Image (cartoon, rainbow, N blue to C red; front, top):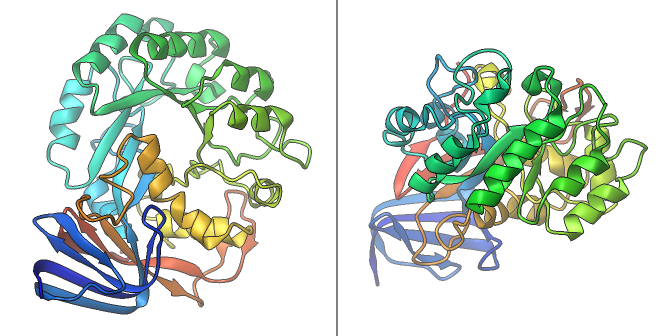
Length: 380
């Protein structure tokens, strides 16, 4: 019999990486997974019994806004995301080259949650109110390259949003061209927000510019700037996926439509990652805007549960280059876990236009980050 720091038994243990899917347990020692599976037994300093929960790798949210509270979108990820099951998150452009060092000190260093950065193509990132690319000269290629070369492990890639709200009257083709130059010079991918308002740049032209490994976020937005503008997934989206472009949900306040998501799932066009785009306007939402609820919405439009779990754990971890460390329950990996329970009586699921889908919702029970147990929170 082994002795562990923490042993969690659950009615179901799921891991897309190792193939686990059934009753079992996960054992933790020294902040890392020591064992996982149906036959794990042993003494532990702390044992938790979760017979009505699913135990998964901690969620990997590929689009969020961890930042100081006085920044444009900033939220405290340890308070608002970690207790809801997310253990790794990617900042969508909150910092740029000019404030990256300050961001690391204020946000990344003290955080318990793991944070990676898609650095803004603009030097100031999203610190100030107003369009991020209001000053075209802020798209400083050399400054961005220098920042990335100084922190290649923490800076995963480059964030660029081509919407009119971000580009502030500048030609979005020029804005995206600068970001692509940054990506080419550093070998880093883009986290790309498709231009959809106004609908003045065909989505097929935008997707054609992207490279294998780049990630399109807001992928289930409705309208001509979305991926299914005429009731079917556009050929350009299929072609981009075949070229190795990845598609991320990026739910947010304006970018998840049940109809578009249903069309995509029905046709087999599954997102590569499920993400929340959690930012300040979500902070006091009730029901909470979180990864379990986003997963539930994908299931409500017909996505297979195992596919949804995989795209909230393993797939985004692989995208971030964290395979073997996050998104898995394999022995030796980091002890990042999420336990969720199904609430059949939950409030209806709602998309950004107010359309509803009934049928229950996954809700968080607890999170484990690097072996530390964090209880789930509820709205104030």
